[in-house]
Image: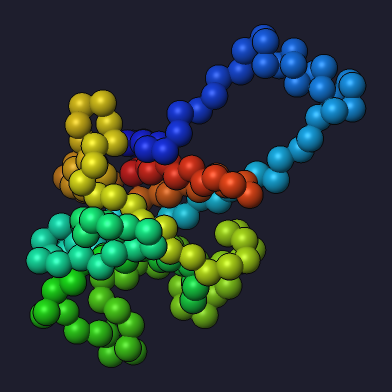
Length: 174
């Protein structure tokens, strides 16, 4: 199993922060956070195919606020929730049902499902960089996917933890 958390390192409990939390609770000054989380499971072979499409495409669509067109997967929540390539290739055609190519729905969250129960209200698109190193040894997410597939892994798990301000994604292959 390979695991990576590219956006935040877990905070380890210490005596100091536990004592502070206990004091806040006893003093009645503790404020609860509205943290939510979910783990989505995707077929690794299809995620890798979408990632390879993005990596090989001659052009790339930009996500919200992006200024540099790089190979990325987009995590989208609208009609279900899915990962898709941001690659633009003139040879791409839509599927028979009119959907964009290189789309991989999370298990149990295909078209016609309402992912608000696990991901909150509004539709969104989150860019996931494929080419920036996510491990200390310089391995990228694309490299992680390739290595996991070569090692026989079949699933790509994406764990999302979020509150009202931030979201942390952790990637796991198995």
